[in-house]
Image (cartoon, rainbow, N blue to C red):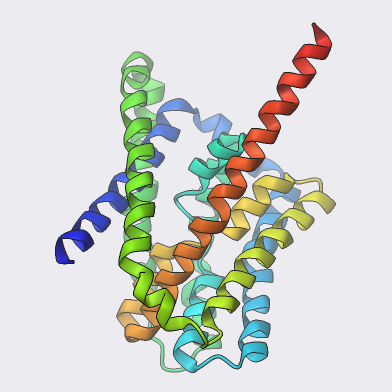
Length: 288
């Protein structure tokens, strides 16, 4: 089991770095920052990720009368946005990957600012600083993205040569990660049966995704991109807070939530991508 845990952590690292590097090597800074100049897009993203999820989490905690550790875990994930997997699910869904990468960066930076302020207001006895949350996100996301963008801008041929290897590493590590998540967390999932935590997590994933879609649709600010951004949470940030300030049950809740996110949103993104491909093929046939 220890070997599987080590492999799981390694594959998680490879997936994050592979995904971030492949985005940086294939995009320009202008492409990534372009959508962030749209005030409506940014406003909808912040609303969908930092206002709607914690409100829904608080309602679900009351509806299911969750025990304190499960309630804490749910609140942690509701306030942690900017999942490193967002660009990958954007690729699966065939939505704008540059905008998805820009959205991820925006939400990561916002999470670094929001979590240390919001968590002490919602939870008593918690001690979390800016750097507690920022350190891992800066090292694993912002710095690799900046380096790969620099390589893409300065050495485009080298970037084009390296891109397939990072993309393959991202895809392969994701497959291994999904299998390991199920194997390693099966007992944790079973343990949450009957507690309300599992169902509350599933409902929160669905409602945040739907909320992001509706806000994006109503605001004309990228419906499916906002849905994927809001539905996925920054598990790394939530885990940092959970492990530093709480116990085993809170960590388990965060881990199980991450599994539910993967199980729900990856098939959704793949189905959306399939439909977009069929729609594009149909349009192409009509033109011909």
